[in-house]
Length: 634
Image (cartoon, rainbow, N blue to C red; front, side, top):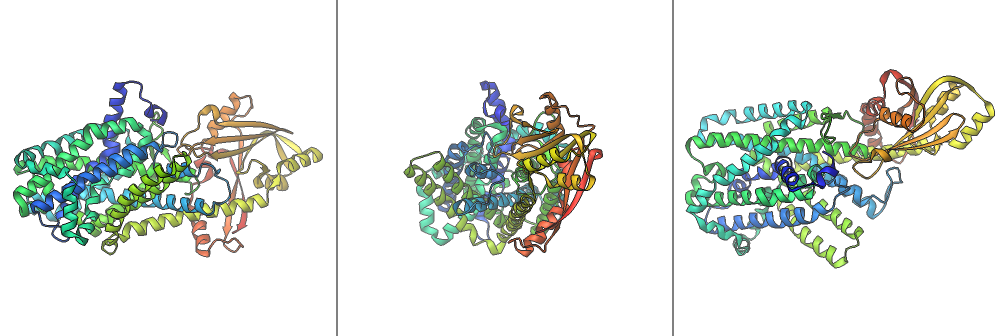
């Protein structure tokens, strides 16, 4: 679904349909938080006792976290920062840095700091995408232990089997699974609300937790421990970033409808219900208050519904990781990868096998290593709160670009950071207990993304230094009148202003040129999609040479075959089936004078060697490609 269609529903029926679809894709993550959020707050290892004061205090913290972070910060404000309809931390980064072109020099000062923040936020989102499937599915399957303890040895194997099945299904695309996203998640929200209502009627005093005074009294009573408990409370707002990242699929209005119409009321009911059962049964349900609201055979259908809901939530984050990777490739922060479009109508439905394999192995490794959702909770909080903080800082820069009054931008930033830094600080103490894991994963991803960007810039500078000005080359062709052979030659070039090195290499050694020579440049804009009408810029250079510049958005995959077909429609006689495509293949050596660190040179060389071949990435017919190699010292 394109962002244009999603963001401008034509009628109330369209709006309701989009809001229904948003339930599964957008709210799957935050919707399954009740499985583990309250449990972690009262867990015997680090939680508080289920007394009346503690239950009301924790519930008050959860309620106001949902209001201030999700409803106010994300649903009300952050959703306004769309980049032509698209959301997410990389779209936000592109919005902040939109004044510079992708090929511009490296940013400095504040600009460089913003790029570092945005990249690290994206890196943390990969950590979120790895931990969410593991903790969500594991929490759902752990519900079986409420019915019988005999199942304990099988919890991890069952979880691993579900995860393997989930990742193996990715290559089929999300269209089939997506058809059940909305209905399955709606059943989940109805189920968690319905299971809670009898307990709320039994202990209606839990509704008093809406009063924030209970949260203040909780902090006063527990002081330092109360602050640290925010590290568990934050689990109730996981999914805020997923909500923002998926805005392009549905638009802000359907997302808001779904939040206030279904998600928020259902979550409040369930959290109040878990509080009520803790007041009623205390220590008996402390280990798992979510499933403690159920008894007898009712546990089994809820486990089934919870498992489906967590699979949906995991699917949404896996799809989000695919979209994030596609953006990173197009913005120049990631090597070319295999991007498979799994739908003929919905452009956003893609599958990246390399990312899918990495996520599957990492998720299974987490489940096998940590074995319990409680152990994973410490790792989860750091990834979530780190990304939340970075989003607040980038959003502040966007409001300054919008020319908001300084007091307004500063006040909003102060509110957001007060919340984000409180949650981040409470989770920081968990670094030794597992919080190091997302930081380590994020550091690895950040190192790869920043190295690729830096390496491509160094490579571009080297190529630019050896590139002959286009006009000089054309003057030489006019003067020497080389032999011209029949047919069309297409030379890919990253610099539309110069004659590409591969053309010079070909002309130097073969001493001939084709009758028709096209210099094709593919550029990426800081927008999600570029209309087909604005795709090409064609310029006749003389002597049978043409300059064609194709422009794509960072959510699109370049297609050279499509570009040449558009050229034919614009009067440039070229047939992709008979043209010869000349590509340069660089062999990188780490012995040059580039200022890159030695380890970055080695990493960039490895990444470059394993990147997807240019002909496959640009959809160039493989039997029409001629590659000319050269060695480059970095």
